[in-house]
Length: 297
Image 1: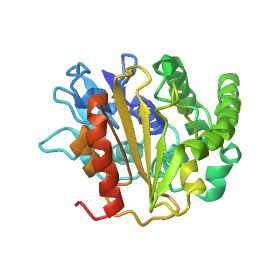
Image 2: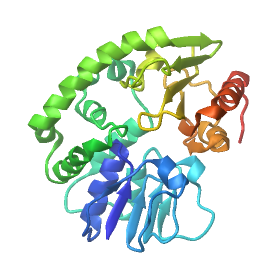
Image 3: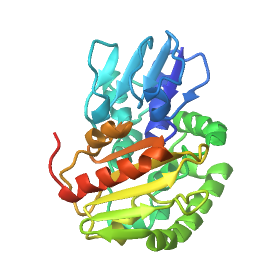
Image 4: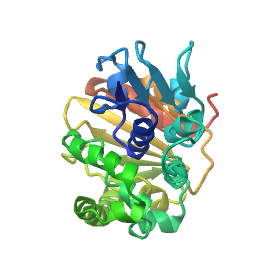
């Protein structure tokens, strides 16, 4: 039996819970949602998919993304929830050998972006939030680190995890990168009415940092758009859309909208990836929809 999940904090915690609840005999398979959507991931009969789109042949499936709403019967659980981890947690009726309530509560908070300005501006003061920022799904060479976090979170409390030498090093790097990211956001972001548009296509590779910071820097925006080239495929563009967590007046369901542009996700946060030749068509449509700010569900 194998876990197939996404390399983000929610995916890591899903893997923690599934390891505790099921007889997992093979290494975790870490994949991106776009790979699942395009059918690029071979799914075996014993696989448990979590925090990713549904694929036939799997043994169980757990998810919470609006755009992944199931069409037929399956074993597992789906509901619109703050995190996929909470869907897994509730499915097993919280019956685990260790108390994971705090871990799941914090995963809900982080994945649903239910954060304060202080938590966004100073994540180094909030262990779970800082830890989540060390998980960067853009770099698949970090697979051993994600696996290490799963093992650590299964057996240790947050203080012990944060004391790990590798975790400490990565946390320091995150804090440094966030300082530089602030300047880059200001240089490459423009505000069109209530939409902040960050275009990192002139930069290679595109910088990465605190994904919530743009909402603090551009408080008049109700939604953000980030555009960049795929690190591994220069002929593909990635567009991420997120509702502001401080100015909650965006009426567009981001997951529903981007499902029309080869992507998907949540109501408040979603992304899509497409060939560069479609950028001139797709991006203006996405921005125009957000500028109109009309409900699409």
